[in-house]
Length: 268
Image 1 (cartoon, rainbow, N blue to C red):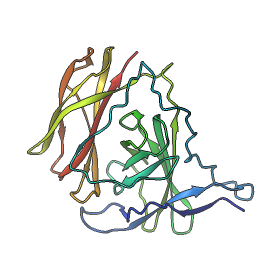
Image 2: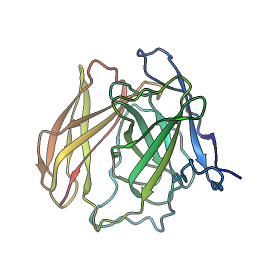
Image 3: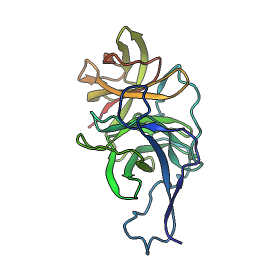
């Protein structure tokens, strides 16, 4: 039996491709790859959406306990696929930035790090018209049942025609701090002030966290629909143990009635 495409079993509705805000221009049907014998269909890549089972729930002493996202008014999101890290929410493709915002959930029985997503888009005739991959998710260390936010980048000059079907392949790594440099930070507060989200982050670890210290923000409608994803940087280049810094995320006149947010830096 050849490897085929089937609809993802979590029901998220339709994602929108381009166009004016609030206007339905074209509907995406999001699909997942089903493992099978691909010998007769070599152009289909072997999927990597099933995450390796991780033995034991313990987190290393260096990375510490997972730091979960701050949730400001976002209702419950789908649980996702059992024993996988999977896409549980997504926003429309944004042509100007060439990105599609995503929310992942770790539905395995242990923490995972370095969650990753690759994506491909095929037109109504089945031709590959776009491919992309994530640029990192926040937080880096995701506990069982935890969420991570980020986006897939398809390219600045990419256009996704009406009827395009997008498939996601997700993966994650077992917890191993022997060479890991990313350190998650705690959001102390985040407030919606006019056209900005203003807040502060804290370094909960026992070692210095260096910059750039990035803040990742995923905006939602009041009913849980993904609106857009934003990135900003804290006003400090490094944080000592227990140190804090402030940040401003410019919303660029976009709505953000609810949001998930997190931050991270580096340890070398």
